[in-house]
Every structure is written in structure tokens, then in C-alpha cells.
Length: 127
Image (tube, rainbow, N blue to C red; front, side):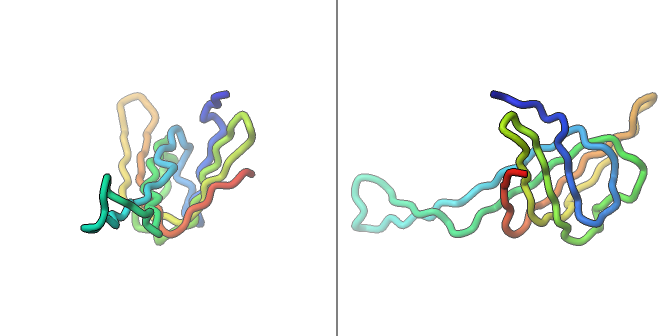
């Protein structure tokens, strides 16, 4: 059964809390394939999986509370917790901020968007 994103949270190390979160995307990763085909290969190319995973980037948006942006911060421990119908899952690892942008529309809430680059190993576990 499908679940909504309501109740999802972002824990961002020791950096100042930057506001509420309205959207989280990018939880996942990619793994390269290595072509091991050679002149004796017949029928189709052969591949093996790379030893390393690129956990990509996280995109986070929300309502900014006016505190300092984490764009200059060091690598932090990040935990994304998402509830599902089966319980909560936590996606955790290290990341650093690679982009930060605020929006200040007339007669509306000041917002922010930031991108975090994942580094090292990330884990998915039930909470």
C-alpha cells in the first residue's frame, strides 16, 4: 500500500536548523557496470558490477527560518526518515551542501532549496 511523505524528516548533523522541510528527493544510488568482454566473447557483451556505489545527491526544499545557510559547512551526518505503511525507514550517511538558493515571493513564505552531495557509504534501515 502506498504512503504519503507526511512526517518525513531531515537530520543534518550539527548545522543550524534551516527551517521546515516540504520536499525531499534523490534518496537512492547508482552502480556502474564494467565491460569485461574480450575477443573470445561470443553472443553478447559481458559485464560485472563496480565495487563502488554513487549515492548521488539529495534535493531538499522548505520554508526558510532565516538562519545561516549550510553552503560553507563541512561534511555532516545526514539522516532522512520516511514513514511507510510498514513502518519508518532511515537513510543515513555523510553529505555536504553543494548548492543553496532562497526565494522571497511577495506576500508569501520565504523558501529555500538545497542540494547535498552524498559521500561514502549510505545505509537504509528500519527505525
